[in-house]
Length: 572
Image (cartoon, rainbow, N blue to C red; front, side):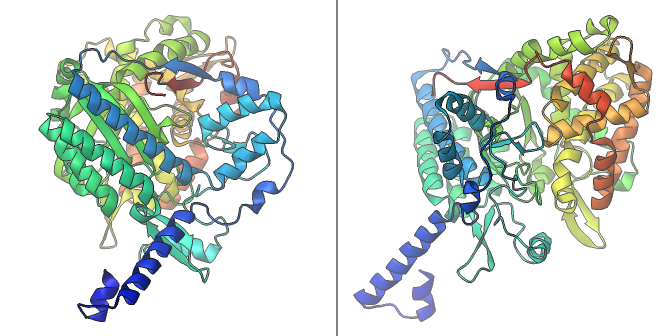
């Protein structure tokens, strides 16, 4: 122990050892008990009303069983899968603590409400993991409590001076893997995840190691053991590198990744997990696309000194079926694909892995996207929507997260776009990836690469148009929803998207869209390359808004689900 080393002696009395151990145990208990950002007295304040349209909000999420065929797995693979699902459930426990201060007290409020309200409220609370509706700017759907922008990562009573201190990178509060709390004197302190969530992480690490012993796949074994170690050290670099090399029928993505939940600074990573089964044939079909990334980077419509030509080019692609999800990704809007890891060191060395959740994507296309198009897209373009275009847009969206500015230098200081754009980063990055995904496909086709037919221009354009409305319904209080509002308003301004007032439908001018999408990519990448926080704020304030026309269009979709409520009957 550190105390023993400081004393500089090799033998201590039993009494002193007991005292030291007792202090250590007390310190760990203090950390474990600091799950909230302060007193929960605020939960008892204000009237506990329930929104009148709770039933309609519940209907916006269609319960969907995700039960992919895993009959081809052998007994060992199935046993490994079960261990990984058990570890994933612990990620859910951690995320609930990260997302919502005083969660148990808030749930207790529901117990005191009329019985006929409790079932619906509990279900909607589970969807949002809080009393704040993620589709509606985090406004409360019961009670009148204000949503804490920093979720449960920070004390709720931060002063402006303390906020400035947290945002100062020299103070040590901006780390991805720390919770910010107060010490006994009231001063801020950063507690590593490995200590704050030690019980859950220790148990999860044990399950990963048990799965590692069972599996016959060497790459999976190496990753699981390394990720288990990382849970105790908060150093995820080595396991992220091994995850890039993971080549197994049964796979898992598990740990702290995205920073969307931290709406105050965008610093803190949220825990999540995907347990998946890979389709090797479909993955191999798409593998050729990763070789185009260096060329696409060189073609970006920005100055050469803004391009990121040093990123790794491995960028594996996986087409998978989701067996189980937990944590950050399980909340409200369901992920259809992801591009990880976010660590720029890993991206510089190896690129990033693109994972497409085929069964989730298929459900959204059939249950949501096609019905939206039937209402809001002109009939002559509805026929251009294709499941393949939806799939390709999703794929190239994820590929585009690995393109453009990442590490940048400002005034001689090396930094990252994420750190400079703070809470605006996620919204702007999602808008970039959406627009750049279309730009990628168009540029590759114009260059004669031979991947797509000429029909790709109208098919991608029409599918993208319907997709804008699908995603903006997530709400502009959420990064993906606001990113699509940006695209909608920007493309209307450029006359690439046209509104027909007589029918209330939209069309897309394909040639104008091709030009406008390149301009949008350029504007966003320039803001990122300059680390221009104020420019990002201004851009989002101008375009990331819910206009009356957009709101009226979305109102016509009230009978169509907004998203899926995933059910995993095999494991729950």
